[in-house]
Image 1 (cartoon, rainbow, N blue to C red):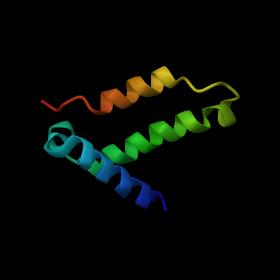
Image 2 (cartoon, rainbow, N blue to C red):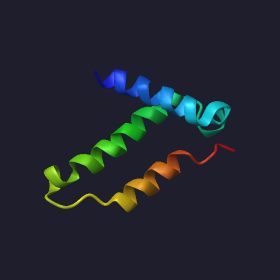
Image 3 (cartoon, one colour):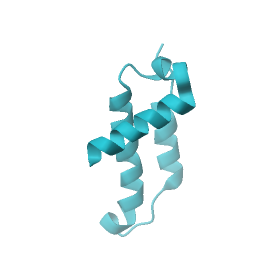
Length: 70
């Protein structure tokens, strides 16, 4: 099931970013895996740590994933 989430996220990236996806990362599946992991961490943060999720930190981490490769 996790692999299907990754594939679905790759498709979202391709739809939204189009050719720009290739400028962001060489391996879209790796990007999707990291993206999903960061979101999962935020979603389950309160259950795991008894602390509210830091959505600002999550957003910052997700935006860093989309920094173009130079």
